[in-house]
Length: 70
Image 1 (cartoon, rainbow, N blue to C red):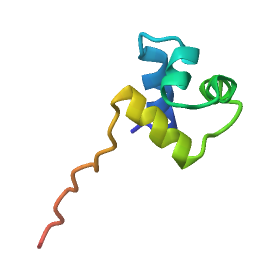
Image 2 (cartoon, rainbow, N blue to C red):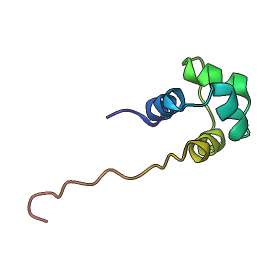
Image 3 (cartoon, one colour):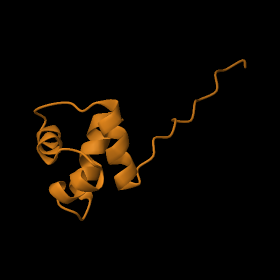
């Protein structure tokens, strides 16, 4: 299962907009987003939230397997 960071990076790279256009749509610094995509830095949860909103990306919980005997 991919990490949240990997999922966000993939969504950024698969978006038809340029990284600069996406960063601006998310009200983020384009350089910061470039460095995140290149694996040179992390992003804060606030930045990740803004990027997810611009990408229409939603975090959903993974369904839990039921334990035997429950």
